[in-house]
Length: 110
Length: 118
Image 1: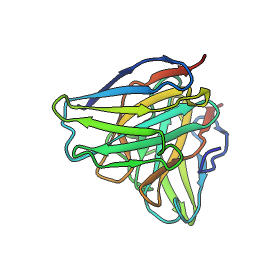
Image 2: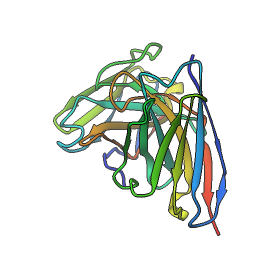
Image 3: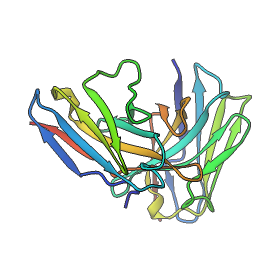
Image 4: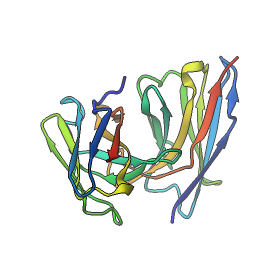
């Protein structure tokens, strides 16, 4: 059982927007602006796509955006493309120099 | 471009010690934290712990009693030791480099599948 809660699955048609939630507590998501999102394809290592809640590393399309309200963070993928079909994981810095992850969300592009 | 190359035994018996090493190419160990993470189908991603170039460590409280992470700056490598393994430790293990922000994993190794079975 993961520390952060994500929906197991999400889906959308090409061109649509999809939002994936990540719910924690005041000791992690709600307490720090250190929420991170990773994209993972089958058999591959995760790839950083959002850090510090809203920031995108160089090379990540601006179709990916992050936000946070209280103890829940969200990843929005706008203008869905077939290549966005992957697993998405959130993580958060937690109290006492700990890092916690969500259970992952499988995004399907219909 | 930073690259992480990891290796270690892929099959262990219960009670043995899991040992994995991660070599860093294209950069030094300085200025960042270096992490180990594992992934299982049932529990998803789990952070194991991290170390910096001077040997300062942080560990996941749930694994702290069995984990040691060490660094060898002369070889630009860091190592994970996980003692007294059980079947529950069967997973794909990744090494990763942090960023300028705490607990952000920027570069990842290729992953090593470790199976614990009698």
